[in-house]
Amino acid sequence: MYLADAFLLALRALGRNKMRSILTMLGMIIGVGAVIAVIGIGQGAAAKAQEQLAAMGSNMLFVGSGSVNRYGLNVGSGETKTLVLSDSRAISREGPSVSAAAPGVQSGQQVVFGNQNWATQVMGTEPQYFEVRNWPFASGTSFSEEDVTQSATVAVLGDTVRKYLFGSSNPIGETIRIGTLPFKIVGVLAPKGTSAGSNQDQDDVIFAPLTTVQKKLLGQEWLRWIMVSATSRDSSYVAQQQIVSLLRDRHKIRSGDPDDFVVRNLADVADAEAEQGSVMTTLLTIVASVALLVGGIGIMNIMLVSVTERTREIGIRMAVGATEDDVRRQFLLEAIVLGLIGGAVGILFGVASSFAVSNLLEWPILIPPYAVVASTLFAIAIAVFFGFYPARKASQLNPIEALRYE
Image (cartoon, rainbow, N blue to C red; front, side):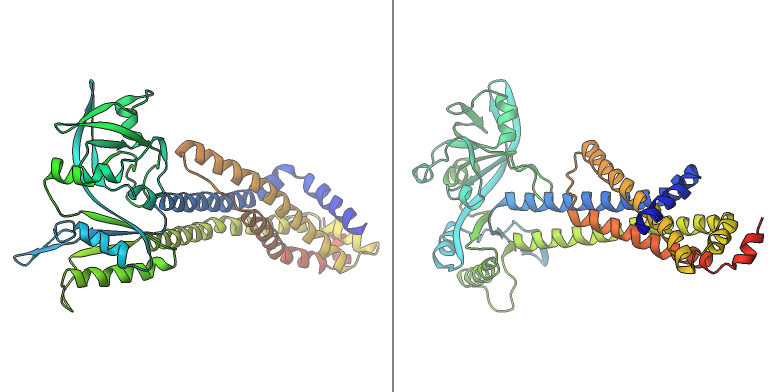
């Protein structure tokens, strides 16, 4: 009952100077709100990055053609012509930790349908590519192994290409022109969105049988890349070592000589993105927490002023039997009330700010429960820490001198 009375007394004391109390709580409100907003936006960004990485494929590794040394100059990656279809077959066959591999080439092409045209990437691959990438179909089906064998002129559209060429109409069965060749549309892929890191539109693409693109569009036999799916995330690192060892042996690369290919593990990209997001969120949270410290200093300042203003009141309370502990507890409770109210309003402010940023910048937010709990507890701890000195000063006043105070 004593605590309830003390709490009501604290509210009454703070209510005597409403504007001053509101301004005192403002630091706590901004601090708690900033912490929650930063964590919510940071966690949302991290979740979006992980979602983008997951959309790229399951336990995926990228094997690409490497760099070429010409007259002492290292030309950029993608220039070697040593990565061939038999390498892809060997990876699938001889890699114990590999579940599937899909070879591929690509080329920028102008695509035409009716009076619409669009510049996009045309990728030649095999049907298992969509399994490796975990890429479902919105309509239609993939081209078949027979289409690859016969170099058929059939194609699968990404969602962005479908929108620009066909709008809301159904493209299945329609014929488009890629370069100078007609291609029949057999499928449309479900939207994937942008890729993590590069922020490229994964749906701005057309897929066709590997042999068709190699023979009829590019006139080349070598591969630009091989997409590999490992049996699990953990085994992807083992699969990476197996692929490097296998390709060095197949390409007859001597010990000490550089690889003529590159192998990238998307698990590394995911870990790097997660670590970067965690570091940024931590740094921003620390910066936002400074506002909480400022709010604590504000509480200490206003409580010191309150002790000075209420010196005579303190003397009267002590004269009628209040102990030092009673006075200290009363002023400490007033500081806690300021922290609690400021923290509660700060939570609402932080959530509202997060949603405002999300709507304005189309940025996802994710506010974990621990952020709300931790911010509230931190606000109370700050209030207790900075409120203790004024409360202690009030409890140590001499009752006789306090009664004389004007």
